[in-house]
Length: 342
Image 1 (cartoon, one colour):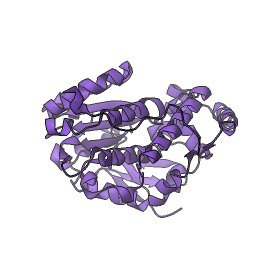
Image 2 (cartoon, helix red, strand yellow):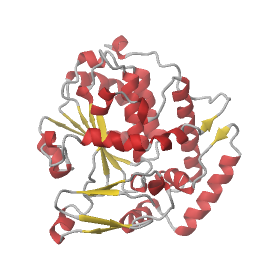
Image 3 (tube, one colour):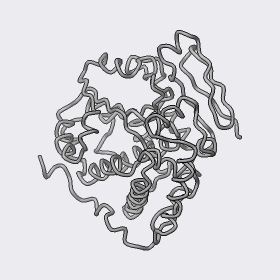
Image 4 (cartoon, one colour):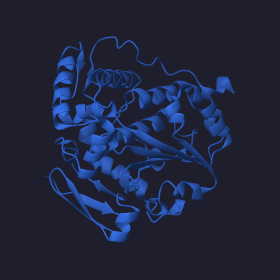
């Protein structure tokens, strides 16, 4: 195993880990309040992908919420593998860790997992047709300041994705570039088993996101992303926190809302400019300094340096998918724009 760097909440805990498990040693008070405020930055994709073992707390979630047992896991993997072998034109990742992402998110419904995998790869094929090269090296510097996965988890062990929509300059950077950066963040998150058990949390800051941003957004891109998140993304989206909403956000959300499932809408929390409301769900200490936290605002640069180190993983992932066949329900050419709806 390559050397790994463990990042934990400042001066509050230490992390020790082995080949397949993580053992957390924390002061009693910290463990009572935020027992999961920690994360691992790994220098190798293998440390995330290898094996099917879960940390004890994640295993408890898998058992209680997903119905996972060792027997069910192996049987479902065998059944899903057989079904995928019968899928024409599909080159798929046959690692157990990859297949388990979809089985866990679909609570071991093999047919539902198969459907999600097919949509996952069909959407990927459409990205290729639209030249959406999903490698960190293709992400422009401006987009690296918009979105990042924070280095510490919340009290439930969930990783947090922060998006600063107002930082986007549509006069310089097209929406497709922002789309690419966001998708790479999701692909990074799905590599950790915690994303399919404890789940993830998304925080979206709309300060500075105005009408000029809205009219430069393509509705087809927003719908594609919404469909991907709900139908094929192998992650459990547990909460979305929207802060500092703007008029531009109101326009965009009005267009996207009809595509959202009711359970997703119920998980969206609107905080406005009362950031303290966010702290009731996400401890302030694990947020960047700009949001009243203790994490350096250089977190965005550090996160993308991590992804740069994993360039080979994303390049390998791009080799999978449907080859030389019509993917049927793949999204159409990205032409519709919000401006036609204003």
